[in-house]
Length: 273
Length: 297
Image (cartoon, chains in turn blue, yellow):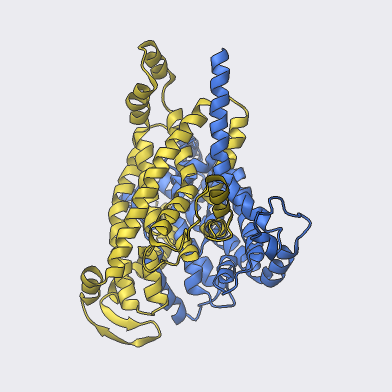
């Protein structure tokens, strides 16, 4: 008994040590966001900042609220459009039986693996031709395309948990596929769909590369705004820290929500918890 | 019957068309563009040059070859670190899973996974500031070592990128392997105990074989991510110093959108594409197999 308590304490200490490795860098940035330019890099360091100093945040928010708004519109927009396309497809791949079913599923999955950078220039030319460059609409479309494969696969892994008998019974009673989808499959997979939505939200929220290619001024997203802050000759680190904190809030909150399903999502539904 | 067919088609076809237009078309168009000498700014004047872009990239362009090499050095080093640390962490969390507090510690530990990669880069750019950063300060005061320009010298920069990359993704490997450890039947541990097996035997004979599928899955998924590594490089080193941390995705971006050489850029994109397709084929097979033959629930 004695040794097992000792063992637990040692293991716990190691666990806390690892936790600190993964949280301290973030905390240091968070603390930095409450410092002025001098305190940011003073030696010895200012360990605990004055948390009432919020000038970095007010400056950043007043300069960038439109970019934050852009980010929110693009993120929420692409999350909704992704779900509208993906959920029916995932349902179909799970419950319909047709030729080439597996091939189609694999094909959809494999588009997830294609590197976005390889699609950037052709899409740039396409949207330039359509006169849609630097528009939120273009970003929503592209983010949706990149998120659909993920959403289809993970939703399908949740739909598969619905008992097949239930679907068959409704079919015999004469319900249309559309009814079954909307009234049985979706309500029964609410948790799974929320997981998919959260992941898609975070992916879009975090996206940098495509936005870098596609936006010039009007449609700039918040990550583009942040990266512009560090390409200036004189980096105002307090502001950068504040912007980083703002950008990190949604992913952190949502990760805590995800908890149980995070492994499942990150492995495209291959691992269930 | 016919109505049912139409209904079923409506479920699936829109997504396929959408993916064809926005996902597949661009890749085919990239292949087409890679056969030309073209500038993004003067698209109407492009010359067909066939294989030349590929020839230049693969046989003459040292920067591109370095970029490929760097990409794989970074990928293999990061993934190795992630597997080893991830396994150790998974094992620790597995042993203390009955403690209430372990849940909270685990949740905090996995926060980096979902953080914006751009922000991860910025956090370390701030910490690793050579003269005034906190890392230099700690290294100097507690270990008495002279601080160096971590991101400003070739080898330290490469190591820094590997560390930043693994910092973000070790927690992913940890929860994946933890999920794997949870599937090991308790009887096997009991049996090993009775046989008097030590921890090393338990690890090599029981644990690793039963989580091998999870490990492979993790490796492949991470490999796909590493091939497209861009954000962290973009914000910390921009491929520098020199070309020490140049990677494939960043090279492509630079060629296409800084020098506007979309012919060369597309060729580089296509090469990344081919590498990805090879990795992907393995990945899809694996995902299907892992999903089919093991019940992970």
